[in-house]
Length: 249
Image (cartoon, rainbow, N blue to C red):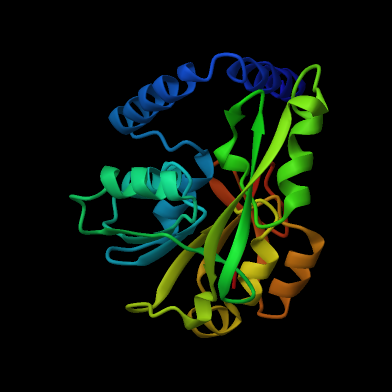
């Protein structure tokens, strides 16, 4: 089943580079369906029903098109969400989507190990923008698609650079204790965690990280964090998830 799912994803990913207008319509339909049936885009978010409480503050670092925001809004708990998205067009889209929701704050920043002006690298293939693969590291933006598209042609790949602003989460003024942080920033997770060392030490937030590296696991272990996989409706300690891994202090 895993191989079939991987191949299907590869087919769809390849197809959208030829029919880009289909993507937004598909995304809008999926978002409406997920909201209607209260199905988060990734099942790992269901674990938060056990872990979060009303009025908890959640940070969504790498908000993209708001998938994680919607997943958090599906919880029975009324959490507060501060989302970070440095891509200008996605930031504007998110502001428009959540402008009437006082529990959601959208900020036009990335998170890193330093604060200041940075370059964001966004891959385009055959003219289609893969905004979900934007990264502060050019190699991350350039290499991911090479093995994930059929008949990949390097001549069709273009990396565009955008100015953005990164912040240290430790220096950001946060209203109250942070209960949860989702990190999905295409290779920038370790730097973002370095810039949040005091926050981790102070608040001990639950972390959800996509495909964490050994470097990340070692860094977090120093703060008393252990990895957990969400499987069969429970969190299993000292195990990594297939895509995302929880870290609990």
